[in-house]
Length: 117
Image (cartoon, rainbow, N blue to C red; front, top):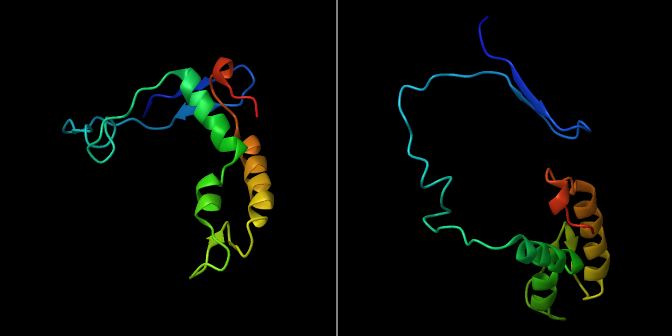
């Protein structure tokens, strides 16, 4: 047999992981700058409660930073999701589109930690 075949899946088949190939590497590679940090910065550890709170805050107003930086009659142009912003009211419709997308892609592996949008 040329390789090991290995598969994992959840009971509803939402997630299926299949090992298609394995190789023995000549060397061991240092991943500390890639996996364990982000541009040399260590990750900030937070609780699941704080993570859920922040995700809900983002969901409730996903364009808050852009909305706050928009000013009527501003110099230059602002584009959000391919739309030229000319009024603050446009953020409402774009936020709803983004919320719909977030609901659609919300498919967590750990169902007990799922955020209900």
